[in-house]
Amino acid sequence: SSLKIDNNDTTYINVGSSELVIQNQSNDLIRVKNNGNMGIGTSNPTELLDIQKSGEDNYIQIQAGDTGSKKSGIKLIEHETQYGFASYYDSQSEKYHIASISGVNTTNMLTVDHDGNGGNIGIGTDSPAVILDINGTDAIAMPVGTDAQRSSGAPGHFRYNSTSNTFEGFTDTWGPIGGGTPDNLENTSGNTKITTNYSGLNFFTGDSQIFT
Image 1 (cartoon, rainbow, N blue to C red):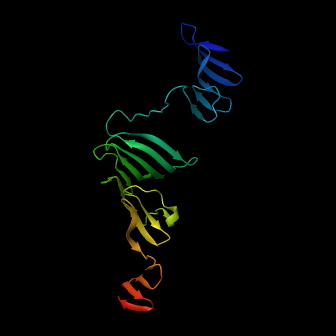
Image 2 (image 1 turned 45 degrees about the vertical axis):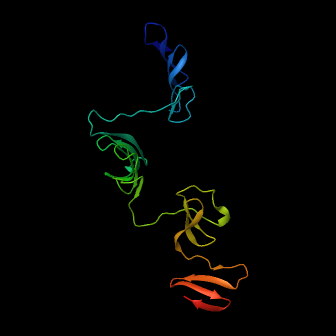
Image 3 (image 1 turned 90 degrees about the horizontal axis):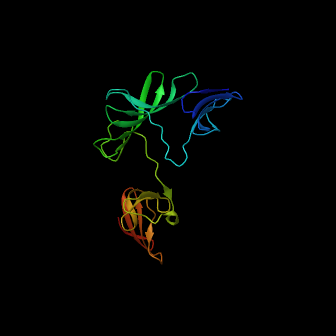
């Protein structure tokens, strides 16, 4: 059965085969399947909400409330709990946040500053002062690899070299940037070498140490 909802015989609400369909000239606008999946722009929704408009860039827009101090976003939480994550935009601070939710407490974990700081990203801080601002006491894991696994490089790249046991960076070539314990350096004949330890550099000719 169907219910006409305009005077031009173009838009109907159809109920049949346990499905609810709103159609415009036989094209599905909204379809609710008998399994509860809802489709907007698609007649075969495969998820709880499936949105598609052919030939277009598709966005979901959620506006904040009617004042400049409200937020808009999405919460992803466990069943019948307030435990999970939120992704939201704060209209007052003009910042985007990914936050953890635990009961009534919301803790921002990542912040992107929209206004004034050119897209600065903060981890553990709501006020990133530079392009990537990390507030923590742990560590940052960086790429680790051998000489042979180096990329072609571009100015500003850095990594940990597991061949020489050093941190290295790229300017016009790869080179050490301090830290680590580099391997010993020696000439091809092996009779002159420079070794390193925590006390400094040691210079050898053959087996004889020249100076430290």
